[in-house]
Length: 259
Image (cartoon, rainbow, N blue to C red):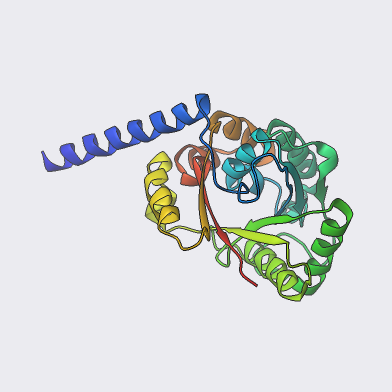
C-alpha cells in the first residue's frame, strides 16, 4: 500500500509539472535571463557544444527560450561525432535539428579538427579551443557564451574539455562586458525525474545570490523531441527514453561563469 501511494504521488507530481510546462507554452513567462539590461535588447549568443545532438539532448530548453524571444543564437560544435565513422552524417543531422530549433543553418559551425575527435579518452586541446571561441566571438559580435559545466551533465571528457576551453578563454579575455554561462549538472535522481525537476531547479535559481543562476523552462518540449529525432544515427531506443525522462528536456539551470 505504501509503494502504491508513493507511485500515485509521483504520478500526480509528474502530471502537475507537465501542466506547468504546458501553461508556459501558451503563456510564456517573463524570464529574468538576459533581461537585466532591458527587455528590448536582443543578444548574440554562442552555444559551445562537443557533439552533434548535444544541442537537442541537453540545451533545447535554453535554445527554445532564446529564439522565442528574438535572441540571435549561434552554435559551435567542436566535433563531427566521428567515433563511428559517421561524422558527415551526424553533421547533416545537426543542421536539420538546428533548423527545427529555429537556429539558422548558416549560424551553425561544426569543427572537424584532429585535436577535437569524438571519444572517451580523447584529450582535447583547450588552448586551441579557446582561440576558436575567441574568433567566433569576434566574427559574430557575441556577447553571451553558453556551454557545459565542469562535469558536463554526463561526465563525458569531451563535454568537460569544452568547459575548460571556454573557461580558459574567459580568464584570458579582456572583454569585460562578455558573459559566460554553464549548464548545471544534477545528480542522477534529478537527471531522470523528467518534468518534476522544474520545481528543484526553480527553487535553486530563486535562492542563488545576485542572479548567478537562472532556471529556463522548455516552453516547447515537443520541438525538442522532434529536434532529437533528426539525429537518426543516434535515435535508438535508450535515447528515446532519455529524451522522454531526462530533466534536461524540460528545464535548464544556467550558472554564471565568473572570471
